Image (cartoon, rainbow, N blue to C red; front, side, top):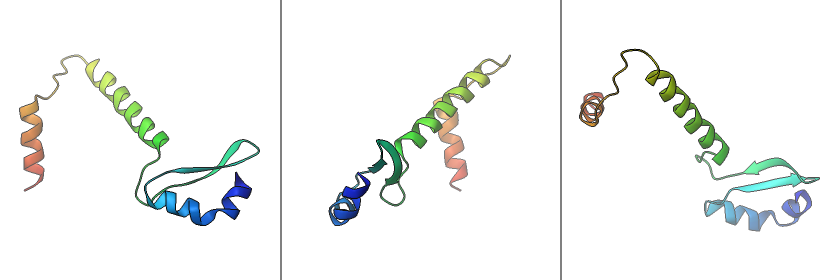
Length: 82
């Protein structure tokens, strides 16, 4: 794919500009990723979600833990906007 990336860079650039993420491989191993600016990679999103699940489990295991209600969450969000 590395050779193809060099010879077809313009076409790859067009695909990325439409939102696609391109993996560049060398010897069948990912060597680079080309993605639109400001987008998170799928792997970074998966890691973030996994971290949130772990945090949620740790919080729920604490004695006396009471999760916030939807109403409390909305109130806190609105308070943060002031």
